[in-house]
Length: 433
Image 1 (tube, rainbow, N blue to C red):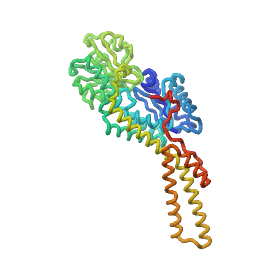
Image 2: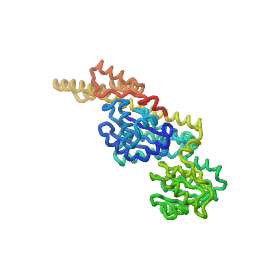
Image 3: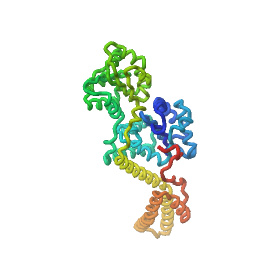
C-alpha cells in the first residue's frame, strides 16, 4: 500500500518546515529502519514542503494505525512533537497518494502555482532514493507516472508559463525598492541550482555587478562558469558592506549571515546606506534579527509566500483536469492489477481441467496434436470475455463481483483479494490540501 506523509506551506508554519528539512537525512534513515512495515521510501524536501512517500505493508498495521506509526517515526527522527506533526500535516493512502504526487509535481500545490522547479525536485528525490536503495516497484511506478503527468501539464496548459518561481516573485517584490537594476551591486550566497536560477533572473532585469560567496568553498568554480566575481571568506565582510542587494540560496543548515556579521559590515566606512536581503534558503540562511538593523529590509520565504499571486484560473483548471484524469487512470490500472490473482486462478482452473481431460484422452488413444491445439484455443477464446469483463468490473470498483462469481461458478479460491480502487485519504479532515 502506498502512503504519503505531507507537511507543506498549506498545513504548517515555515519554522516547522525548516526543522523537517534540516532533519531530512535522519527521517530517511529512520524510515529505512522500519523493515517490518515500510518496504520503501522516497523523501521530498523543498523550501515549501516535506513529504515522505512510502510503500508500506498494509497487513501489519491497518489504516490510521499505519499513518500514526509513520508520524511517530518522523517525530522521533526530527525531534518534533508527534501531536504538532499531526496538526501540521496530511496523510494520504492508496490511490490518493498518486493524485497528490501528480498535483505536486505539476506545480499545482506550490506557493506560486505552476512554478517549474518542483518537477526537477521530484525527479531528484526519486534518484536519491534509487541511490540509497529505498525505491520499490510501486514507488518507481507512481513517480514515473508523476513525471509524465507533469510534462503533459507543462506541454498542454499554460500553467508553467503563468507560474513564477520563488526567486522571480521575490525580485518582483523588490521592484518597488530598486529603480535601476544595472546600478545594483549584488552579493549572491550559494552555488547550487537555485543560485544559477537566481543569477539568471537577476541578469534578465539588467544586473551586471554580481559577486558570489559559497559557505562550502565553491565560489571560485561557480564564478568561473557564470562570469561573476568570487568572494572568499576573508572578504565576505567587505562584500556584504558594499552590496545593495543580498540574495541567499545556500543549502547549509546554519545562518550564513548573522545579525552581528551584517552589523559589522554596515559599520564599514564605505558601506551602502540601504540594502535589501532576500533569503531563499531553507533552512534560513539569514538570521531574522537582521531586519532590526537600520537600513536593512529582509524578504524571507514566509514573507514572499504571503504575496504569492492568485492562481491563473483557466490554466490551473486545465492542469487540474489533466492531473485528475491521470490519477483516475492510475487508479484504474491499479485496480486491473489487483484483479490479476483472480484471473490467474480462473485460467489455472480451466486449463487444469483441460489438461486432465487431454491426459485421459491420451491414455485411451483418442487424442491428436490438432485436437489438443483446438481445445486449448477454445479454452482461450472462452476465457477472453470473462477476462475483459473482470477488468471492466475492477475499473468500476466492483472487482469483488468477479471474485464471487468465479468462486460460485467454478469453486475458484483467490489467495489475495483485490484491493479496493478509488481515491481516499487516511483522515479526510487532515488530508485536505
